[in-house]
Length: 63
Image (cartoon, rainbow, N blue to C red; front, side, top):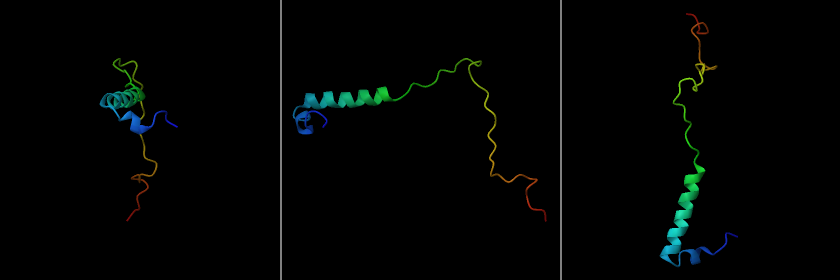
């Protein structure tokens, strides 16, 4: 299913190192690069988040 059997991969230290390097390279290539937003014009203004479930002062029960 995955090519060579796992016991043949670890039969040699060098094969194990190449296998581990392949796993590390796959993990490295799978992580996306961070967004480059060094320019203030490139940053978008995001509105302040308002919690719809928060109790407003006008919604509070009156004593």
